[in-house]
Structures are given as structure tokens and as C-alpha cells.
Image (cartoon, rainbow over all chains, first blue to last red; front, side, top):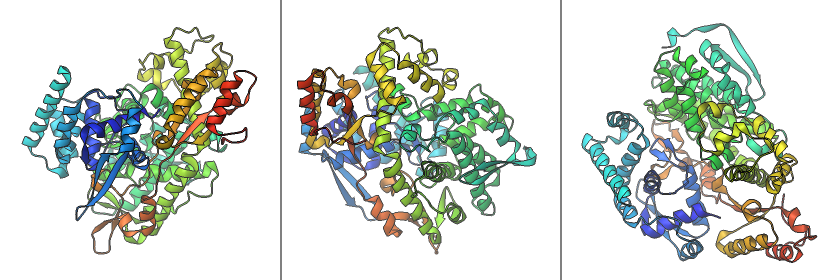
Length: 169
Length: 438
């Protein structure tokens, strides 16, 4: 019961603090693409891969008191900060290991900015295309984000390191 | 592009209870409607198991798809004179609207959960694969099917086209809210569709709403809110979905364990062994599933037979509200008690959460999660809807989650066998024979 909720709670435990809903969306997507067993279904939206299921599940976890959500006013927009609560820890204690050990991966992803993670997740979304086609596609669907060629290449290098780490594990 | 396409000699119309008439003038649209893959949608219900709660909800994805096409057609008529709109995108929009749901399977939601499939991928495969739909689309241009797939997949370069078919106020939602309200017979869910499409404006890469149309959009958001709680999240429908999922899980588990079905479910075997080709998928519809549910009532496996009998004869599970934060131990205790009572908790005890359901609320799109609804202000600027509308703001902030625990009350009230264990279950569930909804 609620194993999928528990996986998310486990992520917050490993991540410490996650700042930003967009960042959270992209972290889970990238972890899924690295074969972590998250079940949330993603589709492409205006800002890249997005899961409504994940949004609602996080809302459930907040309403249950397992995750603490703080809304911060950033002037022109709001940002959300998530941390695990004591009740969340207790909830997690009912489960055996439900997420493979991936502390360093989660920490690494959490240290990236959300715009970069948006780029990485978008590239991964089109991973059935050739590299050239992916670059062309990113430039079409992310025209507004104005990613430079160097940004895109950096994202490809980052994905390579993630995949190498996955193979080692 | 548009000039190369044939217009029908005579406009065709479909009588429709929501839009009165659906008008088809393009030969291409007419041909798409006639394809085997599109006709298959007649055999897929729009609301899955909801008909077990609201008996009128037998409408199909075929009618909905025509409705989305019709709304899109009418919006494009309004857009035609606007500078942000490219008239060459008209046919692409209409085809995408018509085909947006063509990859849905039978009882789509449970089907996807149990067999780990995705209707968006099947939609793409149907449009790009060796199908009648692909052959028709290619008549426009060999690259046209890919464009249609990209619009539906939301990766097409012209975001304005995408937002017509898929955004927080799109033709899809507007049709399903009105259609589902009509067929379920509920009195809420109404809004002024014509007013909305008349105040829609193409603006750069999205559809926006003229500020003067805000109140019509408020009605639309209220309709969404009401329909979610009153229809889509209805606990009885969720009970039917739970049983349906359990049937599919049980049948798959039996197949994997080498069980000898009295009637081999040949069309379902590719699903059970995870090798479902597009051809296999297109052979499946709800009639196929309901046929097996019917005959599986006579199977030797007691669990499969019982679950199918429950579904076919609407003997659904009862439920109680369940709070995982305060009741976690209750669930573990119940599982043990169910085992003691010789009732398999894998199939007869289930927690269903709101996030298990495939519907979404309006979200203001803070932090660039999803594009929100924007109002076009008198000065030409844009404002997010909930910042202007107190009604929408109030709804956006409401608690929207719940969890329910489903179980077969009739098993527990029958004390002729395993009396002690069942009394323990009754005590844990705190009912004395009368409680438990549905």
C-alpha cells in the first residue's frame, strides 16, 4: 500500500531539501530515465516532461503531513521548498528498502538549477532520436529558453556521466 | 497545404447531443472517421466504469473525439482573421483534434496501470504505423502524419496549435466536461462554451482569453471542480475500478503461473506476456474484455470467478475513508486479519488515492510547471487567471486529495466460516454490520 508514495518520501529523505516544483518534476523524471523505480507517468508539456500524477501525489504527501511545503515569495513568482517531516520518517519506517541506494545521484541532481534540469530532461525525453535530431528538436521546443549550443552539449555530457554512474551501480 | 485538399461536394453532419451538429467539410476528415482504427473508438467507453455509478455514462470515445474536432473547428473559425493565426495550420489542428484519443485502450485507466502501457504512445504508433489512419494522413503529405503525432505529443514547433488541443482550457476538456455532464445526467458541469470560444484569442504561442470573458472561464473552472468531485472521483466508480484492476492482475498472475483457463483468452495473451504489438492492441476493445469477464465467472479459480461476478453483477467493494498518517497500522492489522479469515488481501483489500485517478485540477502554473490560463487585459498585457478571479483563486487553494480503503463487506459479514478472524476485521473496521459505504 502506498509504495509509490513511499518512494517519493524516500527521495525527500535522501535529498534533504528540494527547492522548486519544477526542479522536483525534472529530478524524478531523470531518475526514472536512470531506471529508478518511480511509477509516475510523464508527458511532454510546455516546460518539458511533466507528471500531473506526481503533482497530485506530492500534494497528498503534504496533506498527510509527510512532507512540509513552504511557499516563498520571490517577487514576481512563488517558489516551493520541500522537506521531510517526522511523520514522513515514521511512514517510511513501515517499508523495507523501496528505492535503490542513489544518494549521490539525487544530491548531484538537486545541486543543478531547474533550467538545466529542464534541458537535461527534455533531451532524455527525445532519446529515441539521433543526437543531431535531438539538438534540432530541443531548439524547436525550447526556443524561448534560448539554450546555447554549449548548454546543450554540457547537458549531453552530464547525461553521459549519469549513464556511466548507472552502469557502475 | 489547405488548397491541395479536397472539400466534400456536400457537407456531412453528425447529430450530436452536446453540439447539436458536427460539421465535416474536408474529405480528409471524412476519410479519417471511416478508418478501422477510428471506428474502434465506438467500442471504448469515454468514462470506463462510470456507467456502474451513473447508468447513462455509456458514451464512447468516438463521440468525444468528434466533439473535440467540432470545438476546434469552431475556434479556428474565430481565429481566422487574427494576425497570430496561420490558416495553413487549420487541417493539422482538425486532424490532431479528431485523433488525439485514438490510442486509448479498453477501460484505459486500469489497463494502463496493470499492463504498464501508455495511450499516448499507442496514439503515436497508430498515426505513424502501418494503419488506415496513416495511409489517409499521408495523402496530404508524407510528412503530415509526423506533424499530427507531434501536435498530439505536444512537441510540435507551433505551440499555439498545441495549446488548442492540449492546455488547461482546450477543446478536449471543454468537450469532455459538457459531454460527461450530459451523459451522467448531473446538473452541474455546465458552462457557456460558445462564449468561451468567442473570447479565445491566438497570442504568440498560446491561446489566451479576453478579459471580458473571465466569468465564462470561471464557470468552466467551477465545472471542472464539480465534475472531479461529483463524477470522476466518485467512490463507487473507484470501487469498480479497483475490482477491474484486480481482475486483470489475477488473470495475468494465473497465466504466468501456468493456470489452465477453461477458455484460453487468446486476444489477451500478448498483454499478459508483455509482447503487445500494435496489431494486437487494435484487436482489443471493451467487448473483448467484457466477454472474458462474463465467462471467467465459471472459472475454477475462486478469486477470478468471484471478482468477475462482482464486476458483471455490480456487487462492488464497500469503502471507508482512510488516513494513511493515522491509520497505517490499521492497514497492516487488516492484512493479517484478512489472511486469518482466508480472504486474500492482495485482491480484497485495497487503498485507492486521488493521485491514482487520471484527472487534473486547474493549476495556476507557478514555477513553470504547466502553462496556466492567461487573460488578455485591456492594455494588451497578460495576467494569470487566479490572480484576477477570486473564485478561481479560492478553488485553486482547496484540499484536493483523499484516500479510501476498499473491501468486500459481504465476505466479512458472512460469519459462517472463520468467524473469529472476521469479527476481528469488523472490529478493526469499526462497523457493526451497517457501516461501509457504496
